[in-house]
Length: 474
Image 1 (cartoon, one colour):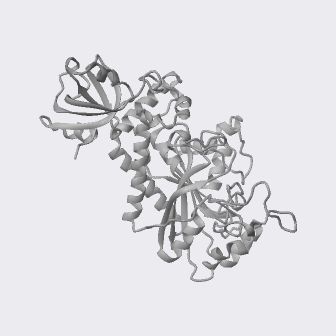
Image 2: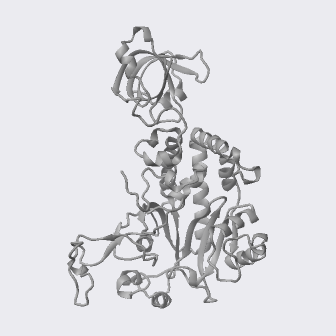
Image 3: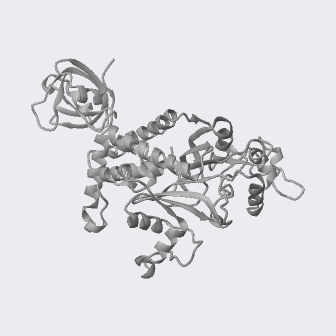
């Protein structure tokens, strides 16, 4: 079996005959081909004897073309590479017209590359991001498997709104122009495919709780959907969520799990994605040269190591509000959202300030009940719930979780307060009637994690094909 370019560059089996396949990045002096197969950010240099190659074949070796090459792997005499293949046999598998191919060897803007998302993974930046995305996904499964969690596939089509957000994509096969109506004039979903109104899921949490009530430790890792009309660098309509749920875990155990999990997946990436992280770090440094020094972010790998090496600071919401209320940005009215009183919903500017204040990742806990979801466990003060958010440097909230309300009567009361129909969630209430116990979990938007680890600044650039308002290409 042929070695990948990554294997060849790592193993350096000098003196052997190697066959490689990939895409031409550059072709210099009718002699030197820089070849990429996507296995690594590095290219392999191929040296061709242009005097003995047909002129027609030479003309076909252009940026973007797919080729197969065979030859001897030798030590390189030139700068920039240790080894190179001296080609004895070359075949162009797929031509690429240089007049039409949009990814010529020059710098391209992110906006331009988003328009050609079907090709952008061939660039160094997006190749690096997608390889890191893969390693992070692998590290997620590796962590939970070793901790004896069970991977639970929760439904993508659902009849419930787990978050109470109301911003969901409807799933229906009814005639859009002439749907059946009830006597009251509303759409009669009893005539629809599932005989009820259904939507794309916003979270697998409620179903994961059911799994935890039987298997003790489960996690989901799947696509979720939000129909928010938010055209920002932080929002997607389709994204991936990681949601562990653990029976018998209280909020403190939940915070321990989340911190340990985040450190594991980031450490794994540091250990296995060195070349890609080095490239993205240098790219970020180049981009920020025009900024004042105080506005530049710390080097990417230092930022990741900082999270791995430091204990997360655990701070109550009440303490955080006091810090924010008395902070300079608040007193001098530099915050866009001023903190006047207890009960305010924290914004990303406040979250970023708290991380800077403590010089560590921060876990906020015990939030006001009024600004959190119905399923979070009510504290004895009946004003706060056992919720927690994890805040990271430069990005703000990356994890949200809670101890779930396990008391049947209290949960029913909270559902009533939130206007949630008991009949719609009778299955959820059942777990509080039959063997209920303390349990907790959290949710992590996978793209937020990839954004943090890669140092990219727009969430649309860390998913292969972003879904955003007005955009469902490819």
